[in-house]
Length: 316
Image (cartoon, rainbow, N blue to C red; front, side, top):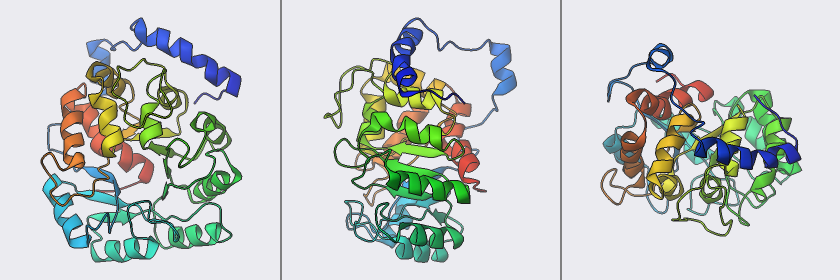
């Protein structure tokens, strides 16, 4: 794992862009790749979905169960809301998620969550981690991403050895994304999972921070690309329209991105439909896009199963 000062971190952008433009992310020789890549046949492994909610924009638990089974998901991670917010989608909180998981223990697990800037933060999150939550999040609140509040959440995660999933959205949630490297450096033993519009927009070195779903071609070397490359404790959540847009906006870039970060990306759906397939279901769409753009089936298996199983210690 590399650690950089702010000056050193920001300086890597030009280097990264030049590296990829010159073919720096080159393929290993076939023999080397055969030795380090586990073969996997399509459908021969369970799929882990790291990002769902219930209720979700009106979709209730029974519809979620059917949705996940239609998509072929073996294990789903539920992300509860904090008590004062429904994560902008009327999502259920800790008690709702725990009750749902108790009824469906073979297919579901849950994170714990709470607002990071209230007096009860530590007490509430620790309570649910002690009850069996396997992570913290979705942290989707209006605080600076390098604030004392996020440091508190990270310190709890470090104590309990669990990951933290954060929603980065410019001037809305977890502000000042370019400063998140401070948290990564201060808590190197905590695995952080990035998600949402600002996380995925910043795969592009030239990203306009006000653009939520940019459609322009990607210039390699963006902040997100560098976080994934330079910090062993940074991971990416492929879920929602933002994750899908990051791949479809520039498929040539996406092929290289999925290849070089195949050990750091995790499949998530984060869709509120009841279909589980077709155009209305972004989760099913993301499954199809990753399968189409990933370099091989072994990389797909990592993103659909292995990476989440490793950092969340999930037996499926």
